[in-house]
Image (cartoon, rainbow over all chains, first blue to last red; front, top):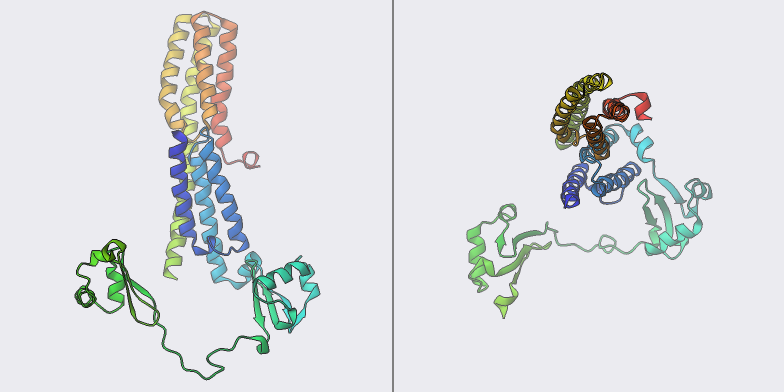
Length: 226
Length: 130
């Protein structure tokens, strides 16, 4: 029972710490973020199981790591030199279509790893690639040669429709009032629109949104349709 | 940018709270240890003089005092350490009850060591950090 409550408390603290530390912590991690994440999970797990350890001995290191992460990311934001030291710099592994052997060995990436990454990105041949950059977070960015780049609408001189921000206005029968306001409409408009589509009650709407084309998409609840 | 600054201030505030409360905890432990240790020394003198009634009353007082303090100590100290002190205190009390001088003195000395080393292990010293 004790472990149950301790787990809940530590879980809440880890969630708070990760939320405060930002999205970088749950996406592609910078080296210093990875260190914090690994340590955080370990720090929470030990006092969770061992009830002899005071809970504060678990919470204080979590908060300290959170502080360090925020300070480091703030300094990285402010000082480019500091960012280079902490996060490292991108490494160009393929430059102007040629694999940089020296850089490859410097980053301890072998040719098989490079080819694997390229295949995963949809490039089967090195000859298709102009640049391949190993980012500080470990991902590989690939810039293909101009002749192998997919044709875009710009290349074909085609005009595109404007793109709108998709906004959900009804979710599971509940009106998202803030989103409705952002879309430039009000509840009165929504109700009259639903009426034209033979929907009398908003609770019967499962999902309604303005899509990226600016069109209103409505889906009724399943039991309502039956 | 403003949000970043807010987070920075918030985290610095948390660290200040951690540091201040950390030193507060050390001070609290040092003070309570002194009270317990003084009482323990009085008991030791009674046992050495074979004044068993006074020794028993003194250790009972110490035990009551410890029972009150141990709840707060459990927030900061490993619970095994607290169990050790409670167990040794109980043993010492029983040895005093049955007038076993050598065992009583031995247990009181161990108890003194356990109580006195608690604030020592929590102090921010070079030795403790490494």
